Length: 163
Image (cartoon, rainbow, N blue to C red; front, side):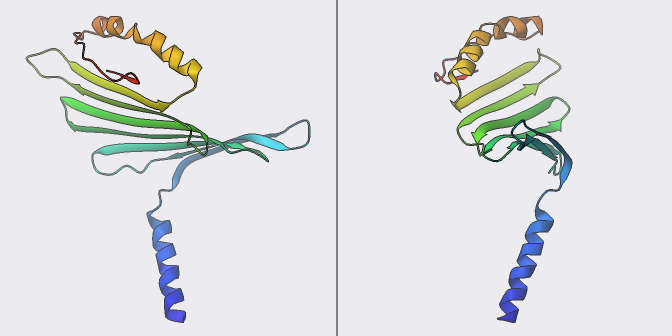
């Protein structure tokens, strides 16, 4: 039906118009010793809207049997001069699926008090080496916070995140 085909084509055009266009795209490809092309493709998007700054990055492994990707989705919002919010999600592995880390941070400054920072790091599944590294880094966070002028408050939390 020509009318149905026209509607489908206009929907495809509308979808293409709303998809964010890449800001930067870098391809680093070389020929391996067995005459196969291998490398990485990095694409950065900036779908910002209003007072929310957003960035998306996709890093893909290029090759014959490559399915490894890293996807980063970050946003920052500063509704007032005295506060800011940041969210980031990093996932990687086969099609950005197996491993994921989420970071949320909120900072505020009032004239009568010290600056406040609340940060949460959560992970669903990460390689064991990375979990061990993050656990060892956790003991340095209170000292870094005190050196930066923050007070320390402990709260209980789940085993796979630290506040």
